[in-house]
Image 1 (spheres, rainbow, N blue to C red):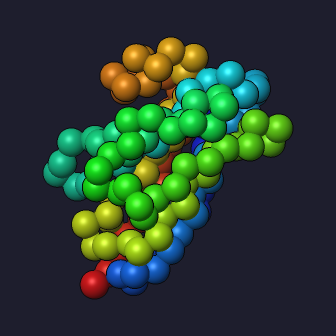
Image 2 (tube, rainbow, N blue to C red):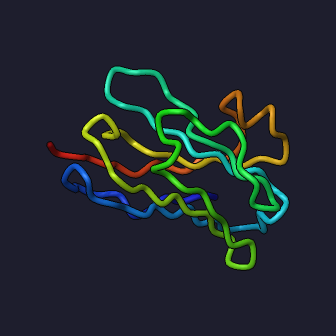
Length: 120
């Protein structure tokens, strides 16, 4: 199981750090993807972090502002979000799978999401 945490209400320009914690098994060999979905909009892939912490599929909309990391020993992944904008408002999800294509397609194990709201 995956669980996201760290969401909340912030002002534009603020920072937040989201965490994705896995239980019930080790995810050290898994790809971990971060997604978000704003109200009335399609889910968007923000990026995928490999087991060796390399990041792929980095969304242009968050490059330079969002940083992906993971701690395999603690079975966690993080998304550091800086310079937040109102358009970053969404429910943020993490997903994990051993198959990169599966993650890209929205498959794998998912958390329940955490709400991030950025006020202007």
